Image 1: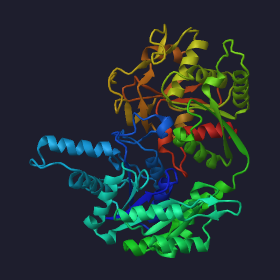
Image 2 (image 1 turned 135 degrees about the horizontal axis):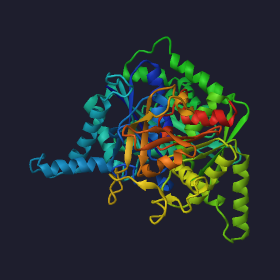
Image 3 (image 1 turned 180 degrees about the vertical axis):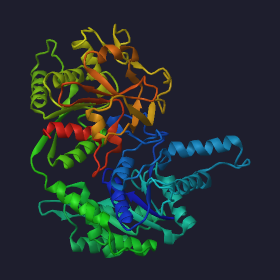
Image 4 (image 1 turned 60 degrees about the horizontal axis):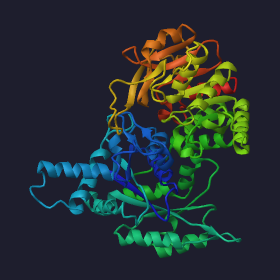
Length: 552
């Protein structure tokens, strides 16, 4: 087993996840089976209870793991399916060690960070690196490990020490260290400054790890003299100082690294042969060029409550982008804060009126409307209004999880005439509880207690739009993350008025997909199809939305 460790310095958000994913693409193109591990130094057991405002999207895996969004990058870039153990957190490691201590596994020894915590980290990595991830039963050849946070943080110190020890545990010849850093551009003349990178590499080397490659993030490509200076001060070869400047689309990143000889350096460092032909890289070049060459726009109104932070909807955005590639249009997402669509209720302040007018202008000019998942009652009425506008005006609509639920609420209120229809999440006293709390879900513990992971949805009809988008399969396996569901007692009344639940779970009770008859595209899914999208294989419900929005 070979390992590539990607760390970061100076500040967070530099693109370690994309760098790790891109290195994985180059390794996969070389014919190796690749898996990935993300280390998050926070104390949370997983990302499940973390706010989207603070942490971005919670990515859900097949086995129900609620993990960091970078695992979504790995899955999309490498076309693999990971498990919850591929995301290591401080909380998981300390829980494992403390459970072992309580069992008496340490035979009365004092339990310490070194060796017990660091050993646990190394054992975890070795175990999970052996788990097949590409759909075969074959053990991977190489594991890409991303160390979250910034080198020098107190939180990440035990993991840095574990990785320092790890290189000797598995053999230095089987480990390659890649450090991502910032080279800021300062002043009118645009001088590239090397001091931040010098300092972060100094810290990393002081902790016992010498990087084999530097990936330098900058607005502009690295100047030759800057590359030479960094090589001199950071103890790496000049050719191993890699320029990672801004690119027109994310699919260029593996190609930029390849052009600088990364595949060759990896093959020399980790002792594997590069094949003469690498079709996967040809596919990436074609995809990057296709994305650059898209013409014509398609406007999708995204009606949500975290619209100021696009990371909160990262997989939804990627799904829309992948579908836009397939229909050959440039995607324009018009972000609409759901609460801005709501009735003013007498508030005629200038700012509120302006926000309302701007939100409605964006909604009315949209080619399609998407209401994504979410929690809490803020903006709910605005989402219900958006679903109603799409239904009444034949605007293509896709509702995901909560987006399905608000569309059902709107339908019951305005088509069935059930005044006050609502979800018990937002109104426990509603006279018409059309969305209800799932009976088996815990009301006392939030973490890991939702309906999570991959579940089967069986089509209930011989033909419908969604079934055809999925290739006319009889069932589909998609990932879930929810606590509330459509009330089974209301289904007959809803369906008799034209909103059909074309997909249900194996019990036939849980409503998973709806479609509205006599509408170009009015679809809702209780599951989250965005978690399984791929650049060359877009999620079917998103592809349907984009096809309808472009009248294809």
